[in-house]
Length: 321
Image (tube, rainbow, N blue to C red):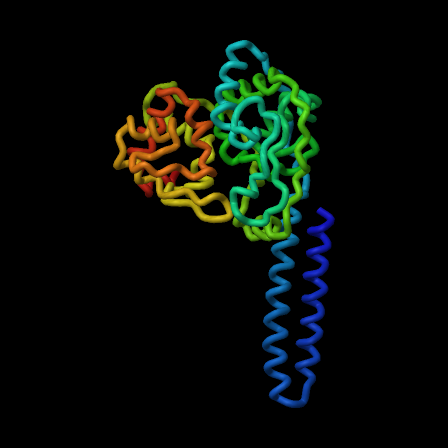
């Protein structure tokens, strides 16, 4: 945080300098010095003021605590919940919170590396009982998953709460039950330290992670090879983060995924084989940033449901979801 604050102060100081130069140019008697100086120094001043405002907005978004209400719920932790939570964690959380894309969730690699941009240190933390999570209440963990808020109230930059908020009440409680049941793994990841570029992208609204609290119950449709259940699965996965809101292709700063409407030309068997093997029907190897290894752990019913949803979705429908 200190480095980014210093960066903001430097930007403000340079803006003040160019503002002073614009004032000096305005006082010049020779037109050949006055007008070019005023225009050039004035434009630079305006740009620096704009960038400074964006940086200040980004710092506010990243570091301002949120006082979202914490639920007093106590998860039962039944064997059925733990097993269901383990499955969800293996197909969803392991892609980020594990260095080898597998359980337990002992902490992941710097996800900024997948973007190809200098976004700083953005390491998904250790979520086993050996981490700080052991001192959190069930309600605080639920809030972190669904609303992206740390126990302290600060936003969690690397938590895709915009997707995980769609987990049903039953499923999100199962995840909490599984987190509690994991073996304790001693592994400390570097603290979150966004770069000035990450702050700028956040301040400009290109990266968004601050959310409103979840209110009311969230339910899942019955499990089955249906488009409805496929939509539910896609809603809490990271598909739109990389492939775009309408699945027509992603944009930086996230890893850029291709247009998924190509799936319309695949059979269900080809789709499932692609996810299971990481190789599409044309023989193309999926990019390393595509966490197909974790998605491959979905059962045939889940993958069939995702296929049905993606195969029947039009771009117009996608933007409305």
